[in-house]
Amino acid sequence: MRRTGLLALAVAVSATGLAVPAFATPQSPPAPAPAAAAKAAASRAITATRTHGAELRAGDGQAFKVTRVDVDRDGTTHTRMTRTYKGLPVLGGDIVVHQAANGTWRGKSVALAKAPDDAKAELSAKTARTKAAAKNHKILGATELVVEARTADQKPRLAWRVRSEGRQPDGTPSRVYTSIDAATGKVLLRDEAIHSESGDGKSLYGGTVPLETTKSGASYVLKDPTRGNTYTGDAQNRTDLCFLIFCFIRAPADNFTDADNHWGTGAASDRSTVAVDAQYGTNVTWDFYKQTFGRNGIRNDGKGSFNRVHYGNNYANAFWDPSCFCMTYGDGDGKTFGPLTSIDVAAHEMSHGVTSATANLTYSGESGGLNEATSDIFGTAVEFFAKNSADVGDYKIGERIALSGLGRDALRYMDRPSRDGKSVDSWSPTTKDLNVHYSSGVGNHFFYLLAEGSGKKTINGVNYDSPTADGSTLTGIGQQDATKIWYRALTTYFTSSTNYSQARAATLNAAKDLYGDASPQHKAVAAAWTAVNVK
Image (cartoon, rainbow, N blue to C red; front, side, top):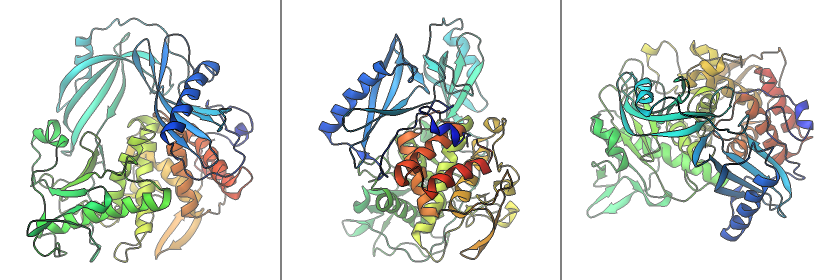
C-alpha cells in the first residue's frame, strides 16, 4: 500500500530511504543462518551501524540489537535489528542490514526519517494514561517512555506508551498500545495487537479432509504431531475478560476428543465440524509455507500454534493474538456470516503470525494496511495451494462464510477492492487514515494485477474485471512468482513501519533478487505499483 518509482531504483538509495542491494544473481528465499555464520554476520552488521550511520539514521546515544540473521544461497546476509536511543526503544526504528558473504555493504532497509534527538517529557505518565483512555477499555500495566517513529512522517518523537485492554465494537478482544506525544499530549498512534477480520466471519465446509491426530488412552485428540503439535480446542462460547488477560496465555481447557478418529459430521450442529475446518486450514497453511518457502511453522522454529473455535455467542469474527500464539474463531451471527473457519480466513489469521515473526508491521496507518494485505495475499495463495474442490482458489476473501445478510458474496475483493463499498483500489494521501482492512485494498489490488493482470478474465469459474489507476493494460506474471516476491519483501526488506512507497522499493528489490533486474517479473512489479498509484 505504498508508492515509489522504478527510475528511483537506478541510484544507490531510493527516495524512500530503502537502499537497492546490487545482487548479482537471483536468490532463493532467505533461511536462518547457522549459529557461527549468524554470529559473524551479526558482528559485521553492528559494525556497519557505525560505518554507515548516516544511511541508517544512527548517531550518538543509539544502540542496536540483532534479532535475526537470514542467509541467501550465495552467502548474502540480511540482519534484522531493533534500535534504542539512550536506553529507550525506538518504535519504527528497526532496520535490516544487507551484506555480502565477505561483509561488503549491500544496502539497508530503514523507514526512520531522521535520527532521534533529545526531548523532555513535559507530560506526566498519569496525564498520558488519561489521554489514552478509550471506550470499553481499561488501562493496564506500566506506562513507559519510548521514542515513537511509526507515524505518517516517520520522524521520532518522545512518547508515553500506554497499554489498554477491552473489547472491539463487535466483541473481538482488544489490546491497544497508544503512543502519546510526551511534549504535546497528542495521540501519535493506536496500535491494535489483536489482528482480526473486522467483524466478518467465515465458514468452511471442505468435504472430507485428512487429519493427523494424537492417540490419548482409548481416544484421539485433535492435535497434530507432524506440524509442531498444532491443535484445536473448544472455547465453549465463552468471552469472559479472563480470556483476554489470562486464558490467552494457556491452552483452552476443552480439548476435542474422538473415539474412532472420524471427526465431525459436516453439519454445524456437531461442534467438532468447525474444529475440523480450523485444524485443516492450519494444516494446509503450514504445508504451504513449508513447501513454498521452506518455512517450518509461524516462527520457523517447528513449533505449532493452536486454534480456539466456538468463541462467544453469534460472534462474527476471527482473530490472531500473538500473546497466546493462537487463532480464535466465532460461529458467526447466522445472518451475515457463518462460522469463520474457511481456508482463506484460517490462512489469513495464521499469516498474521508470520508477519509478527518477521517484519512485525505495525497495525496502524499504511503499515497496518500492508499487514492486512499480507494476510489476504497469503490467505488467497493458500486457498489455491489447497486444491480443495469444495473451496476452489479465487481472489475473493471470505466468500464461503458470506451469508445473504451481508449483501454481497464475499468480505473483500482483490481484483477491484472498492466492490465492498469501503476499500480503495489505489493509493492517495488519505490512504493512511483508513481502517487497515480498507487501506489493504491498495496492496491487494497490486498483488492481483501482478499475478493476473488487468481487465476481464475468468479464473476457476469466477469472473474478474480489474481496472488500473493510470489506464494501463497489464499482463500478470502468475500467482506463484507474485507470492514469492511478496514473501521475500516481507521477510527481507519490510520493517515495522514500512509504507506503500517503501513496499514498492522492497518488492522491486525482492524481484531483482529472485529473477534479476532485467526480468519480466521486475518490470511487472513496477508496472503493477504504478497501476495502483504507488510511484
